[in-house]
Amino acid sequence: MSKYICYLFFLIFLMLSCTSVQEDPLPVVKMTPPIELKKYPDGFNFYVISDLGKNGHKNQQLMANQMAGLSARIDPKFIVSCGNNFQGTGVQSVEDPLWKSDFEKVYKKSALQVDWFPVLGNHDYKGNSQAEIDYSGISIRWRFKSRYYTFVRKINDSVSARFIFLDTAPLIDEYYQNQDYPDIANQDSSRQIAWLKAVLANSKEKWKIVFGHHPIFSSSPRHGNSPELIQRIKPILEKYKVQLYISGHNHDIQHLKEKSGKIDYLITGAGSEKRPCATNELSLFSKSASAFSAVTFHGDSVRYAFVNINGQTEYSFERSFK
Image 1 (cartoon, rainbow, N blue to C red):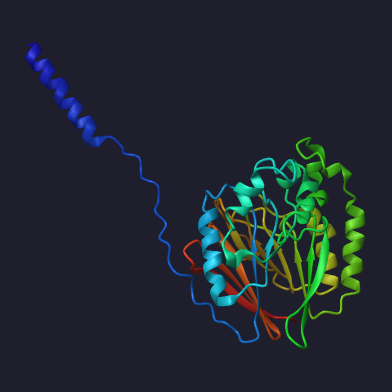
Image 2: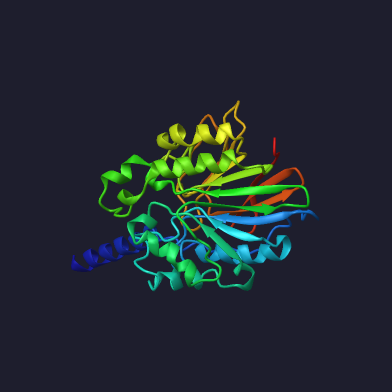
């Protein structure tokens, strides 16, 4: 009898071994050459990326490699980071090891040794936000001179673009109610809004591009629209005919536009980790994908392209300055 029992247990063991669920291996990302984006003879190019700071993991290093590879074709003049430059709790000082592990060692290829123009995100405010500005005195490429700032670049002999960088976290009410953001209470949001109005009112440039960490409109199931920015920032952008508002925060890529609106709202928020996405009535494109943006001005038009970790264009569109 005991012999039959042992045999029965052996059969059960075999059945369980054959039917047990095996853990899927980690996905292998095939590194392909960067896509062939058309290179305009008079093109002025730059990159946008945001929500970084994963020690090269969560696709961050793969993205950096593709950015460097594509640079040989389109030669970006600078790189914009739309905030959350360091995930988690930000940096504590200009000597924080995260500067090496999350930035310097990841974006180390020669093609990425261009000027970086960042803004602050909510995670940056969890640490020493001033240290991110002070690091500009140490790094020759980290060009973060103030919490909000602007500059102008000539696109060609007859066209110029004004680039405006906002500090959006102090414009969002919820951060004032949370002790995890110690530097928020020290900011003067009214002063920043007055500054934005003055900059745009005096801007004579054909192109006006505004960057911030938080989206104005978003279809993200985790972080949707920003009511405070809709109320306080959107009317200013509309009044002074801003063409693009570019942000991060959502770990996905999106293009949104109001039916009767003139502003294109772009979200390039998956510089490393991605999250599930969704769509709404303003969505022209939405996808859960780690990607950066390659932006090209040529004459009176601009091309905006989301490029993924395989060097493929997920989506692109062109528009005129009008």
